[in-house]
View 1 (tube, rainbow, N blue to C red):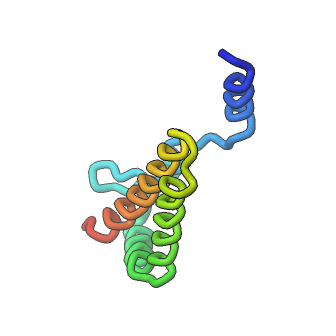
View 2 (cartoon, rainbow, N blue to C red):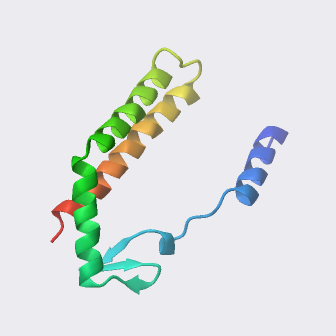
Length: 109
């Protein structure tokens, strides 16, 4: 392994905050679990309402378009390496994951 890759791996392991399953919302057999706590029906209702409001908001549409614009620019006019293309695709995928998360909350009963 060259020194550059070693340094990147070393810094990544020590400087980035690790996200665990406890840090994300899990839906297990109809129960909503966050940080090992089952959400109450009021919390679930509020979460779904917030997801619906966000997914229908002008701000959300602007944020998604901003992400997609930068992804497109990185992949097209600014791309100098294959890694630039991969990074642009990763940005598009991030947007997809966010949309799927919101849609899943809004549609889930």
